[in-house]
Figure 1 (tube, rainbow, N blue to C red):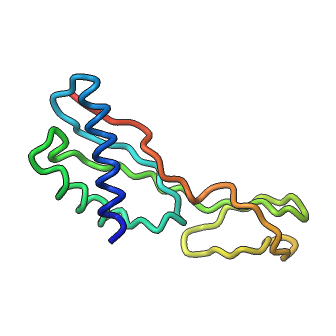
Figure 2 (figure 1 turned 120 degrees about the vertical axis):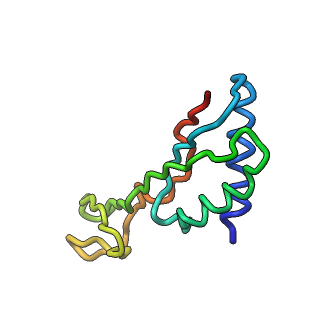
Length: 115
C-alpha cells in the first residue's frame, strides 16, 4: 500500500514540472526503480491512474526501468549483478559478507513527456 503515498508524491512532482513548462498534457513518466525498492510496477500504475483523474496527467503511462541489484565485495573487490530472483548478500566469489550495495535501491523520475 506504500505505493499510493509514493505515487502521490511522484504525481506532485510531475504536475509541478508540467505546470512550470506550460504543459497541456502529461503523456508519459519515465521512472528508474531498483529491485530492492519493493515497488510493484502494476500497483504503481494503478495508483498513479487513480490519482491522476481530472488532472493533465490523466491517462499518462509509467515507463518503469527496473534496476538490478549490484554489489561490490569489500574483501576481494569483486562486483556482481544479480539476476531477478537470485540474490544474496554474500560475495559469490569469496563468500564474504562484507559487501557494499552499488545499485538496486534507486527510485527516480528520469523524464516527463508532455505536450
